[in-house]
Image 1: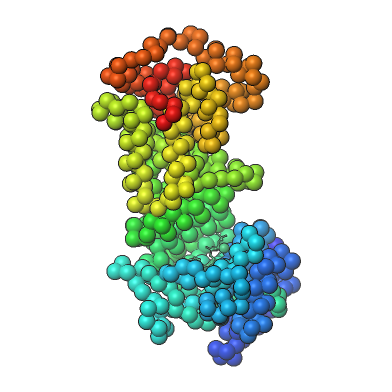
Image 2: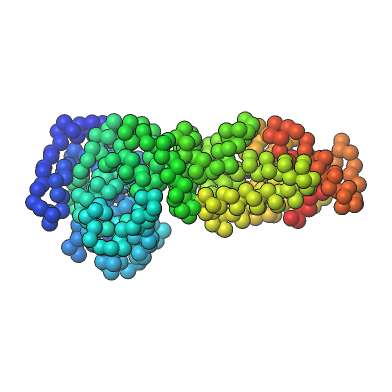
Length: 484
Ligand code: ATP
Ligand code: MG
């Protein structure tokens, strides 16, 4: 498809329309099917159905955004977005299975089984606004509400990047362009629409979107678009933590997490999402950097393989270096046990992180469980290994052990042990457990509370590649309760 695109500017069947605001394609370049090359059959049937129903009801409606962009690039779109002249209320009247969502930016979700088509009403510039309350700015110039409706042309100007502002009409099979989207696609260039500084200021999330699209598409960022990113990275500190969490999902769970992380760090944006991780990556050990990058590499690989990925795992890995640093401090200076240190450290790390990205509870709980199991999986004597195997978070915690090892931590073959144990027959499992005790000094079963604490600290701080307080070797003698 890119080859075809290279031809487009040469033999563009450019028709300029200028019949006033009532004309749907005001001043757009109109590109015919043979030139743009989008195959209508590649568009979601549900998206086409939404567009057709809106058009039949007398509204204009187009496919826009990532769906059009990705089809032109010859890749499979993640989802399909529709832009229309109909207001959210009009859209929701037409579709029974629809819901108006969002306050800052109202859109309609039209549901077809598992597929959701996002329908957005054409937006306008706020200076053109007549309606109060539809547009609102914060003291920092950020748009707190962006619900001023306009026409197709103004909508194109309100979109973020030129490559995201191409409109496809499945009825006429024509592509409409208002800026340099097609040429930028050919040149593999990300270019923001309008004045870059102003556009980043009114919505700093565009800073994140710029580095995300550059990473995902392998595009270079055009100079004027790139220039303000580092300088204005701090705009991100004014974005609500709930919105930043949603962006984190897009940044790290869309298959290009590794390239995105590199970009985020290069452009000094990462510190506004994961300050403690960024600090550890800057000032910590090789392991601190490795575990974060290993987590993104593994996540990208799982997505390529069509496997499930969860933010809980990514968060567990990203926050691990800071958690370990905090645990080390609590165990050395405050003389806490590994288990106590884990409890306190995780509370502190999580509450700091929540003020940056609001992680919902449904991800926080499994993240904590992955961490807790890092103390539990080294203890395998008696029935402990069998009990851990039954834990609902065992698989993620086991993957996390492998991740720690992959990042260079020495956990005395714990990953291999669990790999073997999972598939071994009953007899082998028993002998694996029996073998654990061999060569280990016998631990006293009962110790005083003071004695137990002393013992934990002594055994839990054996330095290694990761210098991790959670490493307990095979001894199982840390004293932290497996039922924690
Ligand atoms: P993806 O493949 O990640 O879905 P996308 O470009 O479709 O990429 P969406 O977040 O689905 O991204 O947004 C759909 C479209 O809405 C974008 O292509 C863009 O035109 C517009 N858009 C989204 N967010 C913004 C924003 N913050 N500012 C301006 N336009 C935006
Ligand atoms: Mg999209």
